[in-house]
Length: 121
Image (cartoon, rainbow, N blue to C red; front, side, top):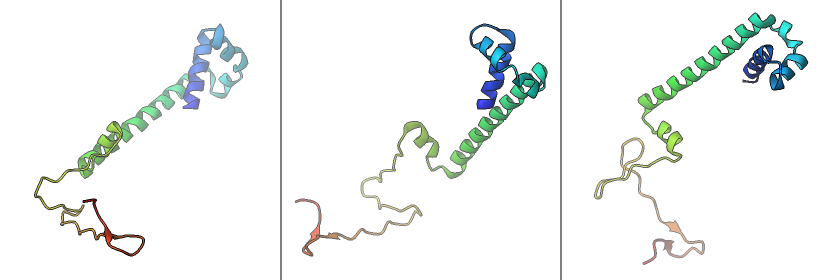
């Protein structure tokens, strides 16, 4: 990203010699021959832009593929910011990720070794 910004700034400086364009043209002018002149600089800028475009397109494809194949709500989580858990209907047995009924959770013993801690009555 830094390199495409630099090449764009140098291309801007080659056409506009005042302000930031003048700064790029007069102080960074030694970079023009390193890129092969204005034609080479323009080619570098276009190839870098294509690389960024392909990078973005490949990543969007991978996100969509993941959403279609796994259906685990990853895209929705990225957009909304949290994951929604499915709520079981009243009277339905709770199930784990494998679809089998979830194992019952044993009550937690109190620190003093007395009765198990449970909801307040």
